[in-house]
Image (cartoon, rainbow, N blue to C red):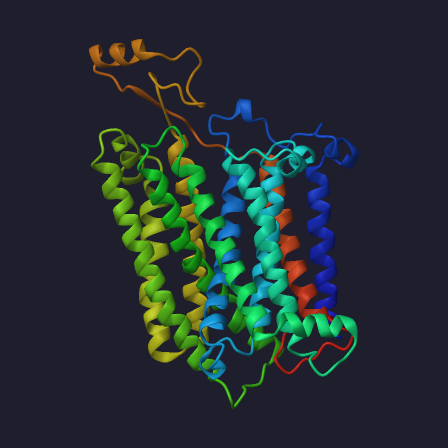
Length: 431
């Protein structure tokens, strides 16, 4: 066992868990009873802040890693030699699960009373997009875990004990196809639902609902490729992984990631341009376009989303496709993930940033009515108010704690699970 990796795993889990306990105000009993709140939503002009950004960011990355990996697994089942991730499919699924977990934690934290989040499941409300997020996170997690068990089962086929037989059955071709198909379906639904949380806010025109859902599906591939582009070269260097002569070389895998990264980034770039054009040319949403083009969020959108998230990654991914460079692949992934965070932030903040005087939306000033609209017209003033965005202290606490816990969970899997192709589980599942 790698003692250095074990030490870092313990540190990540202890520190991350400790920060999360601090976020519970050192009072787990009150937290469980729903008496502890992490933010004061009534005092924040924009109530959905960093925790909502966080669970969308990590959730979309986790589903993207699994969907992207699973599609190669599904369509190359009869020709595994054509699958660039043949030797690392299990590792990729574990990355997906590790990234998904902090997103799930932030779903509960974003309810402001996480101890009451259990009611998402015990008294499910099908008209709540947030409730669907809680349920879909669980269903996606189940799909990824089943894939992990099935991939481990491929290494236990020669054993005859009951658990090994069950794992081997999960890894059989027909069952594995069902598991992979189920996982992909749940992941795409979760991505679409995360987008619809903002697509159907009362501050958007109705047409934005399906657009935001499709944007988040595209972002899942965009960010999933980026996460694998970041983790794979670093893992290969740290573990000194040997190449399999019967599969694609590591540099060929990097080229495939570069190619797919270019395609996904082009799709995201087109979506951003369509979003901007659709917003700017609609009378009801032109105010939001001003925020993105020349307003307070222009830097986040134009620099973070367009330049860092689209233009630079297209160039770098293109060079990776040509050269197969691991250093350039990691660099392109960093820019992509930064761009991803900027895009998610814009998707979260923009629809909450303006409240119309004549609106009856949940974030409008109290007693708002159409009289304010007439007064604004006669005074040649705006008919809306700009709402500032603030990040609370406990939002930062939970975000940092969840990220550290992610790192600990991932390295724990590296230590305990047979993630490499040539590693076999000695004790049914664990190595």
